[in-house]
Image 1: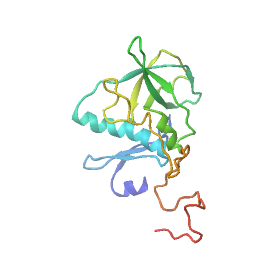
Image 2: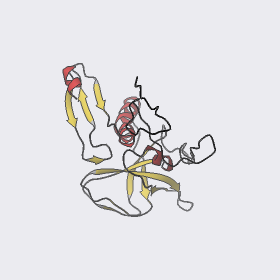
Image 3: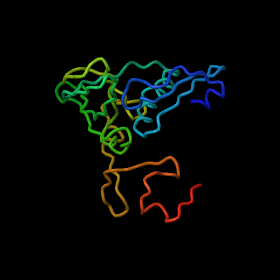
Image 4: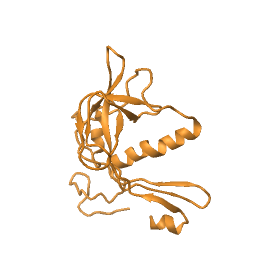
Length: 193
């Protein structure tokens, strides 16, 4: 944020009462350019990108109506934060309604767990309990969202290694200075770029 300030970008807000993505930063330059500072954890980053940045870009082209889905099972979240709950989508065979099935994750650093989800729903921070049958705004990971009952591109995604083993955990480092220091990917004498 200090570099952006030095560049003349005025901070509008920093930190949001939400999970994941609390440390998000947003500002505006003197020329009117909007600047987003997305969080560093992969899940936080993609949630904030899909929740704030993509809708801003899409709405600058066209106004879409909100997509709402019905929560399939009760869910609780006790912190006083807006919560973005990863969900998979099912279509009810009787009513044709889209239902949101909560997907378990291991926090905002667990990017791979999102492969079990089709997007996320936004749960308001004023409440701690959310009940089956309630409708919430849905944000799809896929461009354009859920359309005509077609499956999401990530729903059946499986990541396997060169020995055809299913990979359950994945860590992505955007820097060459990953702090995990795994023996299989780091040389004994580290030479960072």
